[in-house]
Length: 195
Image (cartoon, rainbow, N blue to C red; front, top):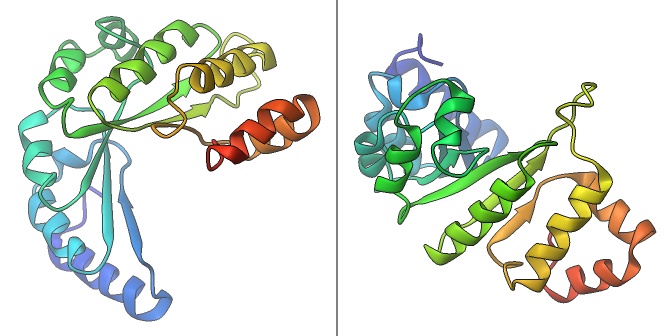
């Protein structure tokens, strides 16, 4: 909420804690690092919740400061400078590289980025960070990954030993594993579940 000040957000957070006993808070939407009070907001929120910030990595220096109070997630859908072209913003990949040791990745699996997602999974694991992958759910067949692509990604994650770092955030994955590939479902359960 870029148009809301620190005081309003502090009241909202206090109500969330008191009335709903919330334990976790995710700050995202647009670009949180553009909020003038983001450092104060995350510091205050960290006293009430476990805080995560999802960013497009426009301001990596700000994310470094925020990381003292919150878990950082960077939205990346492609590996390398292809990310810059996809987002139409030059320097995102370079910005991410400057904080790769403190930033987890949140990625969307699309029909045309499976190879990039696999590279991101490997890269984040090498930097001892996590990646959450959300399969695109669109009516547009040019964006939505196929079941075969999802299966290939699952196999890549399991066979490469990345099950602890990589999560596919999709309720359909569990059902798909259980009905289409019981062996993968058993392996997922053995690894604490990928879903």
